[in-house]
Image (cartoon, rainbow, N blue to C red):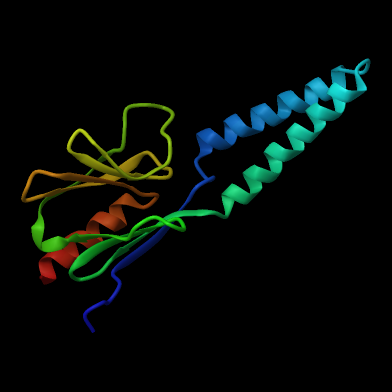
Length: 161
């Protein structure tokens, strides 16, 4: 069985705590403006509709998969949302593996297959990521909710190769 899955994780688009807080504060602002704005019925209704819309979109985003990470004996496979391409990282070309902080910023936008400054980033939420460096010096930064298990699965797969 060549494609035995050693690790699997789904990263959801709307489950990052920071962005949930931002969306809820915006919705709260809309509901407060709705409550305060008694004189203008049209704008009062608009604030209510926008607040409810923010809440509905937030709920939908909680269940929307941004990307799926799988570690097999030979590859790390990242499959993204809808029309994104499948990314396969060959473990034979990986020379360095480490678990580090994803970024020093407080707010990080979700990204899939973002090429920038010699790094390819995959991120939906969490503070830490697994940094994989290949033979050519290209760095794959894969954000994870379970970075220790992800790193251990990659190390186990590298040991089996």
